[in-house]
Image (spheres, rainbow, N blue to C red):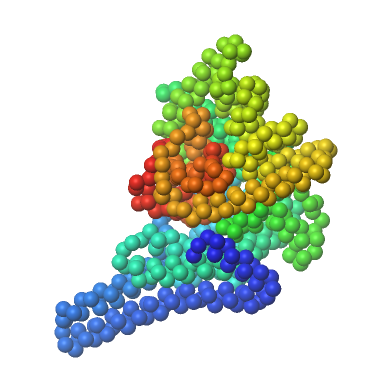
Length: 631
């Protein structure tokens, strides 16, 4: 199913679920049973064929022609059995026991009893900013092996009560008191999703019997059940509200957005800066052991407000069943009975009360062991790149010292840009003074104008209006300029300096025109396989350094590359693909999240997509592509 068709089906089924919820839920149930019914029918056919062959063998002895039906029946039966119980591999993370962390297990048991949920068979801690309950299906998805995974960064960022709010939400997907169909469909979607990707990568003759059906069935079941899966997220939030209250859930959802932004945009950038002063004989770094202290050092309120406004403005994603923050908060305020709770409506300027401590003490005696294991795993992956990154930072620092020693009047645009890079990369400070010096030398420099407006639009800088006007004159940057102009107009309005109505109308018209061209270009770009029309990548040294720095933040990364495609699309821009190969195979949800977060951070001079090898593209497709190694 093509992406456009999938999105269209999702929209149709969402409308159907609102128009006639009962009929829609019956339709989802019947289609879910159809999938399992086809598998059972295939198994019965295989058994019948095998029985017929065995009967003929018993009656007249073995004949050569019997080999083929015998192999066909065994192959079909094996394929069905593999579908009903696919291998998921070992669970990731460090395992905990009740003896290690009695306080945590007592809290989990209380939540389980209140939710009337099934028992947890394993509790693990990994290195992701996340928490999840993974149900590893047994036969027909009816039996489950439940694994709770808590991310160390999440534990380091939130106080215990808020971590338990998150756990209550995850347990809400397994609830036993209501919403049984939604919870079962939620689990079934994940089972078929893993099965779909399992068979896509299995080119054996054994899998061929079911791969065509799974390839047809899963996209349609996924689109049909999308609305129900999203409703299940709201139901899981209501479970957390019932246990901890609407105010606690509201505060937790907002804090998670803030701490996730801090983790993605600040923590690892700050940590990798230490590579500049690291010597070969030094002890290995320990980011996970030191994470609690760093994650509790909050950035300035203005930056927190910017992160929260960005989260509240995020639009629903047709590829993600999780509702956006704005919709989740609205549902929490309504409460389970549709009555408005006494909870303030959050705005970007209203920061939540943040955690006063971390939750790592819940790990009890296992805390030191888990931290050491996570640090060792990180160092195994980062050791080689740590040294190379340190060399790049030392070179950047030396260049900055050399340029600072020169007469400022003798510096070129490239020199000022290098100083701006040094200020931003080495200290994390705003490089506005250096960029302004460069702009004085090159007032129409496209890349420079783009960097300036991205920095100063969130600050409501009145000069950004003129810079945006200049930037809009470049065809390749017209859409970015019009998009950033909306943010700038909103920001100066929020600061009490509303623009004239004519200016808003002008930028709105510009955005509509640019958006239409951009949507058409993205549609063609997305439909063109990333291995076609490949050309060598040529990037400026500064852009390549920034790209490598962003890629290094990807957890569990083994290798990374960038490629470029020669596509004649208007507005004319370059087209890139960043390819990621991870050390351990992630779940489809984890792979999508990794790609999404990296895509949000990238600042390449053109359109770009992020591909996780094995999830979004098959490894053999990389052959013949002009790849530039990033790691």
